[in-house]
Image (tube, rainbow, N blue to C red; front, side, top):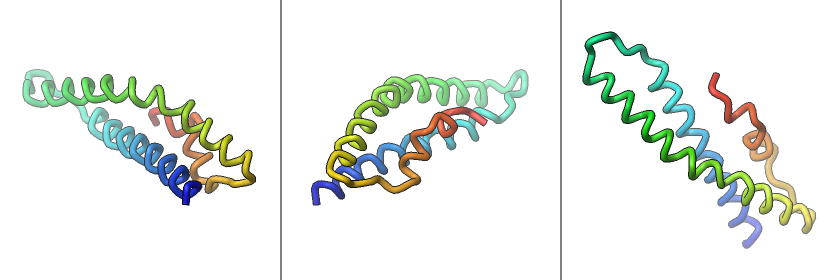
Length: 94
């Protein structure tokens, strides 16, 4: 039960981060036309959200790695997709 709780916590944290990144990449890839003040303000809002979340996301990697190591010490493995999500490629903007 405790093992499942740790795995669920890890998965939920990584999924939340991944979904946020995907949504912001999509929103920030839209072109702002000169003179479109509303769209510019919207983009600034997205950039502010990224700045706010960046601090939170910067600090989740070490605890997640510690939890994975803890599980490994008891011969428990996380699903492969969890370790893939921790790789740098998921944190890069395409």
